[in-house]
Image 1 (cartoon, one colour):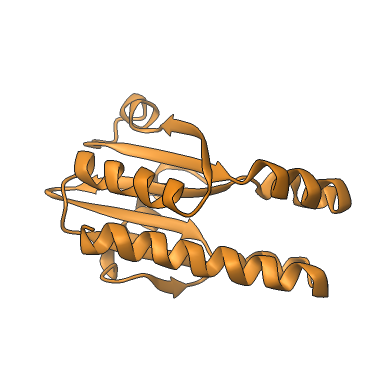
Image 2: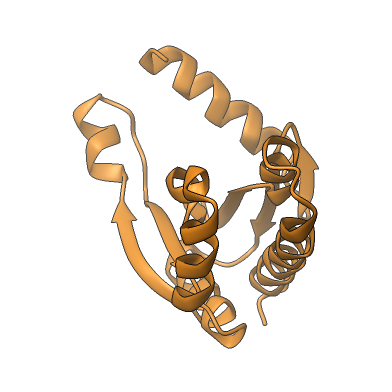
Length: 152
């Protein structure tokens, strides 16, 4: 995907973000909090649900190198170690999709959250024993995004 296409996708994502919603395989939400506060709320909401944050990836520096202005842009990776270890041992084809992640970026004095919808994984990996896991991940992602959106 070339830089112009990436910018177009980002613009489309920003256009309709009000509450956690599902659009083309994504969960999205808009927070009225500034980026730093939203990042703090996001990390707190993730750990409150028993997940461990495994990595915070800064993306804005790479965007700046491609001459895209960006206030703040982070990808937060998280999961439950034992759960991911067990799932990937039985289904190694899931390794590229784990741990879970939420992207948070600033838009003026607000922040936008975007995550892959677990139903997308369910479509590619329709194993009955994974269905409750994907459903729980979806529920947790929605609750996490609601918490950040509501500023709690």
